Image (cartoon, rainbow, N blue to C red; front, side):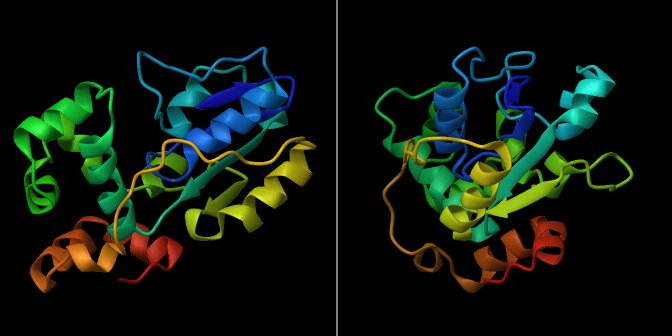
Length: 197
């Protein structure tokens, strides 16, 4: 997450939605802020960010996030865990407890793996389901939607591409049964954001 009083923005960073690139762009435009952490977490729900901010600052800020097709997002997340040269605790957990993609989807769901089951919708809404952010961009239209953010915030510089993983088209990683596991788990995201396999 990034909270920038200078840019008057709050970026809700959902995992594997281009967020590391967006953070880098925001930091290039406001070097006075660091990549946000709350209680040691980088990926924080908007409602929790709001609870830690002055209400006037929250209201004055342009609040935004990006989402991604759930099937594609899990493929990217898994490959990031397996490919990173300097694995963090979560990557090590995946390598140890769910070394196959099917295992990642089916079994990395409790403890440290629970984060892979959270709907992206929960990052941008309050507990009653009301939207807390002003704009939800899509990873699939990252350039177009970031152009809107850049214009709104008056950002300079181009969007860098960082934290990229290498993998085939996400559809190649699923059989019908595994596809349906993701469809059920992320039903709310699929309905809210109009995604399809």
